[in-house]
Amino acid sequence: MLYVSQLQGKQVWDAWGQAVGYCKDILVGDMEQPFPPLRALALRNGGSAPEFVAAEQVSGLYPSIILTVPRAEVKAFSPRGDELWLLDRVLDRQIVDTDGRRVVRVNDLQIARVRDRFCLTGVDVGGLGLLRRLGLGRLVCSVLRLARCSPSEGVIPWEDVAPLHREDPIRLRVSWNRISQLPPADIAAILYELDRKTGQALITSLDNETLADAMEEIPADMQVAVLSQLKPERAADVLESMAPDEAADLLADLPSQTSEQLLDLMEDEDSEDVRLLLDYPEDTAGGIMTTEYAAVPIGLTVGETLNHLRRSDEAQDDEAIYYVYVVDDERHLRGVISLRDLIMAPSDVPLDDQIHHHPVTVRPLTPQRQVAYLVAKYNLLALPVVNENGVMLGIVTVDDALDAVLPTAWKKRLPRFF
Image (cartoon, rainbow, N blue to C red; front, side):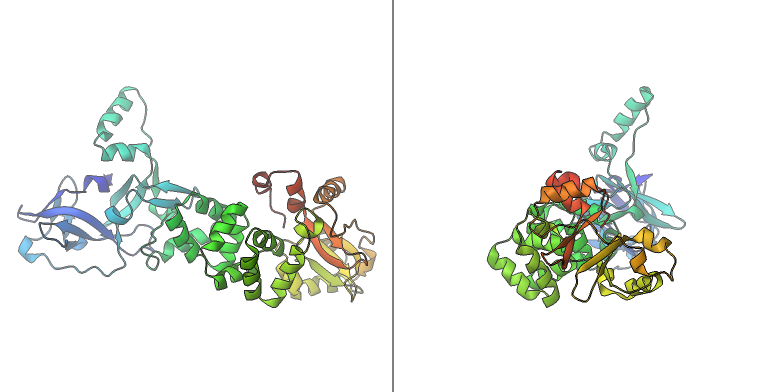
């Protein structure tokens, strides 16, 4: 297998054996392909600007770089601007292994002939790649063979990686798209490992909803750092995409003037929900509840309830419905039913016959530890929060309740039910 480090600085010969220059860099294109083809070689031949040779005029790369034509017949190649410069922009840089979901360093790059073209096929992130560049690769491999050990390559297929280049946000859109498809917890871990400038480029590339989901998985201090990198208008949009309780926690960590500015930029309905949560102390049920839950009016059958949920904006906002709450016209809580029991019930029976009419509830000022105790005692995944008149204000999910007894880092490792 051929590696980029073996081509760096190597002399280039034309078809008649005349020296043309030295390999300064290797350009690949068509980044959306699993194995991007080589588009050109950048040569250093004494001038200040590199000379480019199209890949079609290269007959071989190893053990010598040889062209198919004499120097006089080399056609001028002009980069299109969407090429990836392997030595200048990829080698020794950070990339994301989208299969292993981790940030790694590029120690070398693998090139192979695929059909009739040279293509970029993989990234060497192992120690052997680094030793190869230091000229110790063969020596180490020989020693390992004598010891009857096989060296570990540590090569990741190119189709499983995403280069992170803050200098080229447009032509590396494919990389951003690959990363945005990962689970929010993995995106959060990647953001945590990246250097500041590269992380900022990734943040810029993510859409508001994806960034909001990822921010809910990172520590509070990093949430503040990420939000501070955004323009106020976009920061407000991201906060709108976050769960209200998460947005309220984040705004509570910001200076009051900044929080008020962002609340004013948010949509009225979203800002009202967040302001409601900010009115309660952080260690109470009101401070940790979310206002996103599935509720239906009284008087429906089971079938009508399911149809109502499909059309309900409230239910759409609840990312993982587990309980359905029954309320009257003034939002008084009348009962609750689990989604499982709702689905299993006959569609023509009244919902009132299936619900629990006296669910366990808490007041907004109930201490968080008491909420955690009730969640554990009654084996609940969520607990409704009501005021002194029985009007439903929100719900506390099990993960937020357990935050009182588990460190945040451990809580974020729990399965997300909501």
